[in-house]
Image (cartoon, rainbow, N blue to C red; front, side, top):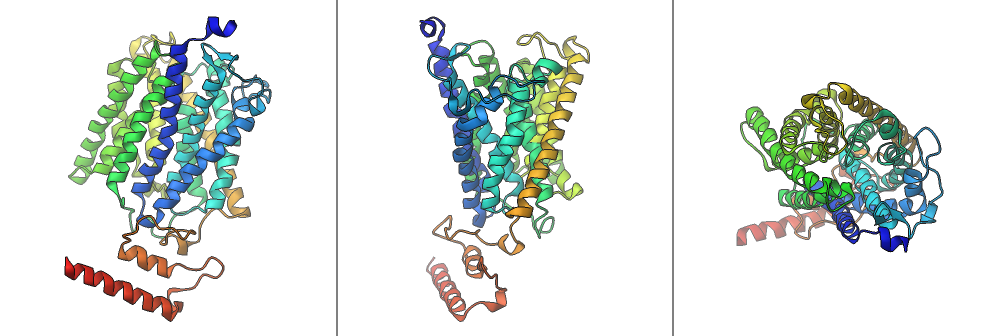
Length: 453
């Protein structure tokens, strides 16, 4: 009877739809990252994202949800194991007006996409076995504590510090950016970093990935209201506005610096805008969302080049987009919060610096924790089972025998023939005569096809 009296079917339906939308973001991210890398690494990027779907889902069932949202064990740092394996969670248990199982699945989708984002920082130079171990350990030691700090009502960032984060700017965006920086440093640079920039092998695939991410982001942000009214419409509108404003700010900087605007920059700009509005989407006005999106586009357009000045090989600009975008969005709450949702005002709405300093402390605390623990995890994995690939594997299709496209380019064919054995890598001069003969046959075939065209 309690369920019938308290359950809101509209809220439940909206959160179920939002969960599905956010889950779709991880395959979207796989396409987004897959199109940005070289042809020989696209399958590796797809595998890294889909591995997160499998591993984090099972980990969330076992202990993840309980540690993140179970009763606090003290100080707002972590939950307990009362709900391990979803014990005590069923259709008759409610989280506000929705079944707790729905809320648990919604939060699970956040955990999945967060760790998947980090893969962009080490694209093309991480072993799959190292990545699989990293996904499990990092989710346990970094994501889950931060999720408790921010998303749990008992978490210290919310309950003690008083910082605001509507949809995950700290545990998702800033966290993945700081972790991406740490793992990029721990795994060292590619051998051709700064000498041979990575050009996207398939920009249409990048745009398809962006479209899926954009669609899912409405569930990510508006779904965080946990209702089909209230803050959800505001978060929905602000998400769209910020993305579009960033697509103005970033291209302006790109035009000024390069003399032209690239499609990759436009796609990255949209992501930067949605990253920045994530923590503030329910706290600011539509005008504030436009300002935040524009600022994020400008800041991130400059930030993606910091890696060259710092010598950090953040391959697909996770730090520049998600890290800096998360910082801009989280601090902007202290500037643009209107008190409509939380009752707290930002500097531009008469609230002074009170909320701004709380947001700044949250950024420093969460970012530092994520960076330090992630670096330790990555180094430990690299020293034990190996996380960094050998340099000779950076220009070949990876450790698997699959190829992404049947109509392989000459470079991909030659890379596969040059591919060293896992057990005993051989230099190019040590190819067998059979491989050389096979390469000659392929070259002849390609030349005939060109003549026929």
